[in-house]
Amino acid sequence: MKGIRFFRSIQVKLIIIYVLLILIAMQLIGVYFISTMKTSLTSTFTKNMNEQANLLSEFAAQTLASKPDKTADASGQQTTEEDLNMLVRSLFSINEAEIQVLDAAGKVLATSVQAHQSYIGKKNTSLAVSRALQGIRDNEEDVIDEDNVRKKIIAKPVINGDKIVGAVYLVASMKDLYQTVDRINRIFMSGMIFALGLTGVLGVLLAHTITNPIKGLTRQAAAVAEGRFNQQVPVLGDDEIGRLSEVFNDMTMRLRDALSANEEEKDKISSILANMSDGVVAADEHGIVMITNRRAEEMLREDSCQGCRLNELFGMEEEKLAGLLNGNEKAAVIHHHIHPGSEDEDELMRVTFTPIRRRDKGISGTIAVLQDVTEQERLEQSRREFVANVSHELRTPLTTIKSYTEALDDGAMEEQELGQRFVGVIRNETERMIRLVTDLLHLSRLDSNQAPLRRQQTGVHEMLEEVADRFSFQLRSKSIRAEVHVEKGIDTILLDRDQIDQVFDNLVSNAIKYTLDGGKIVISARRLDTAAIAISVKDTGIGIPKKDLNRIFERFYRVDKARSRNMGGTGLGLSIAREIVKAHGGSISLDSELNEGTTVTVLLPALIEDGEPV
Image (cartoon, rainbow, N blue to C red; front, top):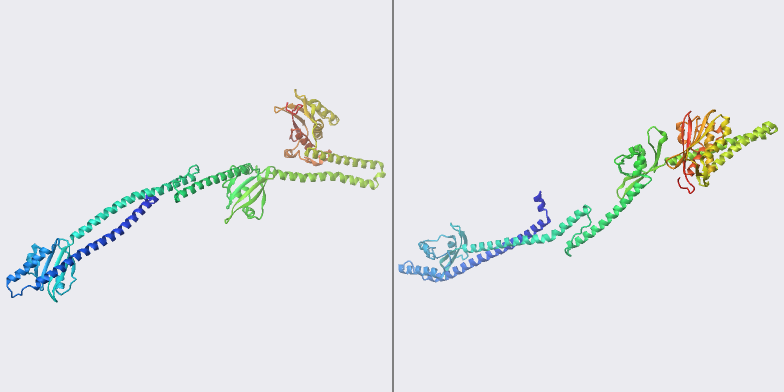
């Protein structure tokens, strides 16, 4: 694998390309040069042999033309042969060449090689000689002898006038020619090897100048991929690579700025999501939750929602969820049970679905926004109940007044006793409506902060004793004992005496109403560690069921509606008491056991004259 990676390197590829280009160029040049040189040498060698053969043919023509006939004496024949031998040996001395002069019959008359003197008088049967004796002038042959030496054979006819009187036969070795060609080949190969080595070195240097900046760009690209944007690629020139380095550095800076801005936006979005009062759940196109914020996990009582399906997370049927995701409906209200089986502790959440759309991809996900509407629904329910209760409370006395007025109009006024009784009923119902309207106006002023507190220093023991004294007649009529206990160290407290008196009058009045004859009511005050004073009204009455304790301070709420109305209550006393205590910066709570009694505790901050804690 390392070898394969090595050959995939740009530097190696460039070097190989340079070397191959030089090698191919030199091979082409070498083949052309050597081929041309060889052809030229061979042509020169052949031309030289032809010139010598032609010259010898002219000289031999004169000698052969003067050759004596067969009838002549032997001395004449011998003289002709000696002349030809002398001519061949003295005039033509080609290295390693043999020159023969033949007569018209093809017999050797003279030879330039001393060792071949035995050939004289013998017939030369070479094809070239035969062709020459026939008058053909261009007779050339290339042969390789038994010593593996290449030789050139040329045969020329010897013509005297129009008559062929003999032939000239030349055999020359081409060994020196081919040795010259081999030396040139070796010189050329050595030069080519040297050139290739030099080209390789120059290729390495040239490739290094190209690949080094590329390696720098590669390292910087890897650093950018790892999030390190501080490094810069060195710009080594004004060429294409230098321009690429400049562009890459500029791209790195722009990418760093873009990622920084993206991170800032991501942090902002994360901060917004984390601190939103609404829950946010993001899911992919398959309904799998990808992202949730902290508020959504708190509302859904889940440690982690990622990987859950939306229908399982929201407890919806898949058909309903599909309808919401497809846009048939925008929002749905779901019930979330904090403790299964406890209907009173259900939470209501409105879930609004918004599809995530991407260009050219359609819907790629869903954003679900969760809003806790439990309190809103409770307030709406309270408003509806309030309107119904007010309507009911007003309708009952108005109906009674109307009935008794019609009775008086029909003649009941003529009977004095009956008329006075009817007028008394009308007066009582009218006073009841006045009390109801007065309480409503009082609540309205408290809700709108139009009932300013007129704080003053008030003695706690004196205030509670006066409360008990105001109800002394009712207490004696039902034989109920009232006790007042104030802890030592509690002297005065800063509060609005009139409004606090209304609170405790209401609490003591309720205690007397729901305590049986012979019971007991205890009014006590004690100091708490939290710089507050706790004032309690405890009775031994009929008590309140557990299921009604959470709603006992709601407006018009009655545990026993018929009995409370008959006792003259409007159902607003405890609501007014709570609002007054809240206006003082305190709180009110109620603890009760059925058929054992009820304890109402008011916590008031112990303030001095300037409003600071004691």
